[in-house]
Amino acid sequence: METETLVVAHLKEGMLEKFMGFMQSDAGMAERSKVANVSKTIGTVAPDKKTVMFKIFVTDKAALKAFIDGSNPVSAPVMKEVMESYSVYELNKVAVSYTHLRAHETDSYLVCRLLLE
Image 1 (cartoon, rainbow, N blue to C red):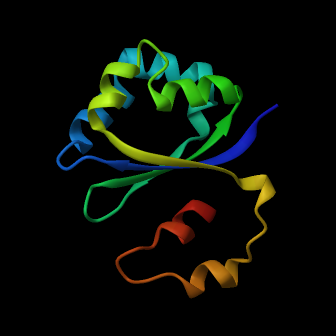
Image 2 (tube, rainbow, N blue to C red; image 1 turned 180 degrees about the vertical axis):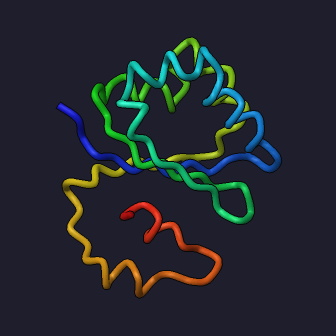
């Protein structure tokens, strides 16, 4: 069973390229496919390039935690180097109206609408 999940990661200054390089690498893709349905992943980056958000369809919650928190031996070296902090939200447990999301939207931060489309 897949669980719709939002992952918000705050990266250390200047680490977006290293983070994305790993996420798109063969090793990163292999580990991500153990965690979620990679073909359904939707990602976005904040204008300051320090925050990334991914809407993912998780198939293994324990593997997701290990992938992000550095206990997965493949992702650990990169995550420990690039990650400042992260939050994980199960989207099926949060009921927020589209109107509410739009109320918090600004010209420079259109993430909420992009994740819904």
